[in-house]
Image (cartoon, rainbow, N blue to C red; front, side, top):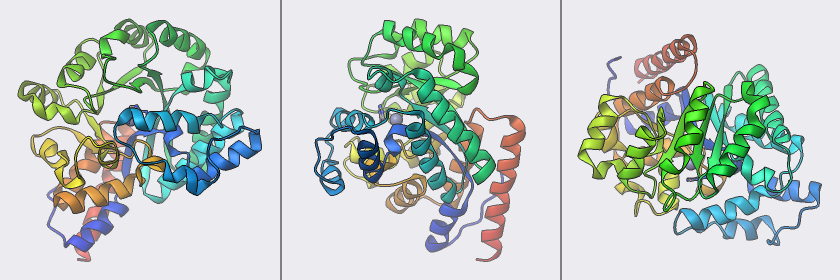
Amino acid sequence: MFKVPPVTEQRLQQLLRAMPKAELHIHIEGSLEPELIFALAQRNGVPLPYASVEDLRQAYAFTNLQSFLDIYYAGASVLLHEQDFYDMARAYLARAAIDNVAHAEIFFDPQTHTARGVAMETVINGLHRACADARSELGISATLILCFLRHLSEASAFETLEQAQPLLDKIVGVGLDSSELGHPPEKFARVFARCRELGLHRVAHAGEEGPPAYIWSALDALKVERIDHGVQAMHDAALMQRLAQDRIPLTVCPLSNQKLCVFPDLKNHNLRQLLDAGLCATVNSDDPAYFGGYINENFTQVFAATAMTARHAYQLAFNSFEASFASNADKRVWEHRLKETFERFVEHD
Ligand code: ADE
Ligand code: ZN
């Protein structure tokens, strides 16, 4: 690992913004800004239970995961046509490029849309076209991860997989999200086994609000390659050892954890402890339109709150590339760019 010299606090904040990084935990429906929700509602004639953009923003005061999900699913109801999915993903990718995201692995929740009569191909084709255009026009690499909603049944997940089958060349993997408590990963063991046979990568939300036992079963019953969130692992020493030993990445989302009251305050966040324990932790935005910031805001705020160093910054960006499902050739290019960025900053300090 490249030896990272210390830099001043101000310089570190600039470095956090400038360094190339991968974003591995972003729900595309959670990137819908209130302005775009209103514009799409008007374009599609969908009524909203809010009088204005400000009125909607006022509702973004969450006490836990479920209080957020109720509003998040209501916001997604404005998405009807392929162009809507394109516009949403394109807006996120343009914003991510500004934050020096070199590569994004984007979650989407098809059941939220198919339940409203939107075809699977409408969803995937719109998102995929935005990813392809972003590569050629913004120079950002982007792939898609289809998430099953865990509050729905195994049968619904299987039906969703079947609908996606003709479009599998447009997605890199599958995930598991929505209400965690009461919906343990093993509910989806057979679906994930089928996805594995189909050659898809696998990730799952676990240990966001739920217990360490859900992280164990995501690993052992679903055979996931990454854990989304995973911050509750700190309560289980044997699990911490397993995650460190097997270098199972955690896609941590500091501002999300703060807004959903997983930690009382950002200064109590355990990202630094996870990293210092040797885990492959990464920083991500989760649902940036709802939680007060895109990926760079997550980096700068959690660093300011927990006094992490340039060495942590380098490790987090390096981990994000290592943990991605990109090719080894792409990873080496991004890691080289990361090292160059750090050398440039240190030279001019
Ligand atoms: N869907 C969107 N954001 C989520 C989160 N933070 N946890 C679970 N499901 C989600
Ligand atoms: Zn999430």
